Length: 362
Image (cartoon, rainbow, N blue to C red; front, side, top):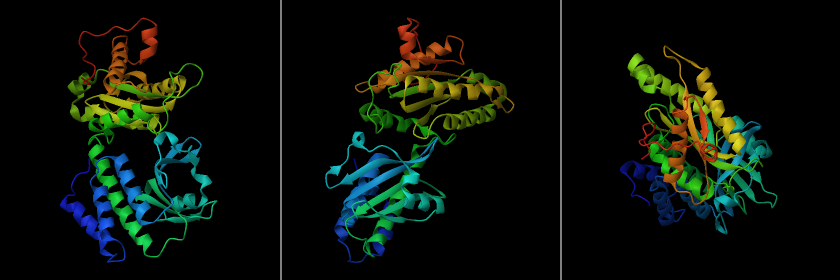
């Protein structure tokens, strides 16, 4: 639900409104800006900004695009879209497109330009506006219009993009763990719920077998014997271990996956669009990276992991419970292991703990 703007947010609105005088419908512009500043969720913020720009720019289509890294190079992924038919469902998003296929946008990103122009196959004008945070842009606003963009229209869009960028920064700050920089626990519930509903923007598959179908996965990771690290070396070195493990999580998993710190030595990963074999390979890559690393003063540290596929209709509590049971199995069978919930259930190896001291989900 939208919240009333704070005094800081009202100052941001004034900056946007200052240059427009009576050239635009102030009531409509103010309504949209208040809507943008009222959201505390990235997905709703995306919808609010494209709704505002789409109406005020008289656009045919307006999209929020993500720039994601892939082994083959950067990709462009649709995150939100509005057109004459209304909002596009996440499950109907087009396939990822290599950034290189959009030459004007690729050049814009390469030169760190504020915007780029193009023409669609239908002759419509296209304006791309990367959301620059420092020297990095992970988000691009794309506006498609039947006619050329009027001179007084672009400053208005620039102003809205500025408010959008500032609120993205605020949301990022509130969603991050202060020690590791990973997403924090309070952001997890909404992201897991969206994954269970629509696969995080891609349709969830049927149960994965060896046939290569992609699915979505919930992974729980726990640093082995972490209490002894704090007891022996102190919390300063313990914090350094947490930071280094967090860095290895980010480098071992993919840009489209989501990594959370749940508190203490516990981490959760939402692993998207991977077959069972791929999921196991990615998770094992992280585990072996940690085991092979020499931590300053501490030496060797290992992690145990449990994971489960998440499917439409699963409840968040059940999914977390199953991944946690797989983690418990790894902890009680030697540690420094990766356990797949479905596999240990099928093998009749699952032993439910009388009390769970490996995580704090419930």
